[in-house]
Amino acid sequence: MKTYEALANAFHREGVTTCFALLGDANMHWAGALATLGTRFVYTRHEHAAVAGAAAAARATGDVACATVTCGPGLTQVMTILPIAVRARLPLVIFAGEAPLHKPWYNQGIDQAPFVQACGATYRALHNQAEMLDAVHSAFAEAKKNRRPVVLGVPFDLQQLAWASPLDQPTSAALVAPPDPLEPDSVAISEAANWIDAAQRPIVLAGLGAVDAGARAACIALAEKTGALLATTLPAKGYFHEQAFCLGVAGGYATQKARAVFADADLVIGVGARMASHTFDGGRLTPEARVIHLDADPQRSVQGRHAADLLLRSDAKLGAEALTAAVTARAGWRSEAMKTAADAALTLPDDRETPDGALHPMAVVKALSDSIPSRCHVINTSGHCAYYTAQMNRHPQDHYTVMREFGAIGNGTSFALGLAATFPDRPIVLIDGDGSLLMHIQELETMQRHGMHVLVIALNDGAYGSEVHKLRSDGVTLAGSVFGRPDFAAISRGFGIVGHTFTDLTDLPAHLDAFLDSKAPAVWDIHISAEIASPQILSAHKAAHAK
Image 1 (cartoon, helix red, strand yellow):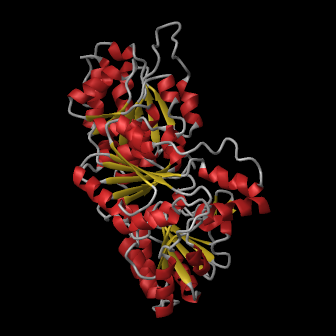
Image 2 (image 1 turned 60 degrees about the horizontal axis):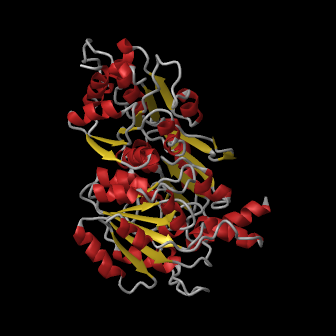
């Protein structure tokens, strides 16, 4: 047995069933050994796609996901996705290899630890054969416990050494005990209950912490008893998708009608929410509201702004249940009129007219929202078009993924790979901008080669939309932000994928039916207007200028 085989066996013992990979000298023998043990590999065309695919899988399942890239340039290609995974608190283990340890000079050699650490991830250099397997299992334990990416560097000359030691070191299951549920303090519950009883217009705001804790029913019960409205952070979008008195997403992506309601709130109860600046639109969303932060790690200050007035340290589910038992039942601002207003806030406007005659992005998203069944898994990315996709308000949270923790475009195709591999029985629908898609368009070939059931929808305005609208607002040149509309349908056919171009929406339902029946990837090129700026862009740009 070689060392790379022993390392592969350690990953196998950790239960790695899928690995996203791009091979090179420093990881190819290890990957081959792991594949021989039964792990399925998704072989991507770019290292970023491999790690981003694993990141999407980790977000969707909550479990540790695995990726591998080679040393040097293979690792440097993932510098964008690592901060995303760190900020999204995603448990990843990445086998990166390292340059040969006993070679005086190697073309692809680089000091990998500072690079990874600069991105906020953990780096473990495995240079001692006697400690390697323990380091692998400890990496999985750290990824699980701290919910962060861990990168393993193993020089590939050391991987070729003979292995004669035992293979049965304790796995991460023995190293990480399941955490005990964090019970809320009764005094803190009493104080929070007093705050809630004094409020007239409360809102229960759920985040991914509530999702992870299974706190949905507890949040709904708390809202019903206190007469509160419901809302979510953007990552938890769709958590209350079928509930009355729900305002949808809080923050910059809230609808204009929802924002008017948010502005009248006098109390926000954040349950398992990060309380990030964008969730409160920098403080502009609920200017008159006091804030309670119910979380396993509640914070008074987040991202440089005052985020909460009262901290309640607790598991999200247990804390919400305790509050429900402690508060006084009342109608709050739940009335038939408010029910109608909340429903109207989530009803997409019938926007169709555009200055250039191209499709209005809201009309496109409305047609998609009306047509895409809930069994499809929708991916919302970053960029100008993301605001519109975030208005698909009737899709369930467990079939909707958004990761914007670093504000980076170019991730959509990679996230689609990860979700398609994780949920092979679900049709995956990626809605992305043309500029974003072109950054990793090569992953269409990966989808086709692996037979993934992915529909890639390009909202194609022929430009970098956010930049166009900001530059236009400033009255300066649009040079460098406008490129013309690439023919995505033709590009997709070059990869052996069905492609369609849409300049109207008449045939959209029929093409969707064909995609759902096909079990194969498809690409839609939908021409939208470059003259329509989203409310979020207009508001954010105006606020930035005001500063």
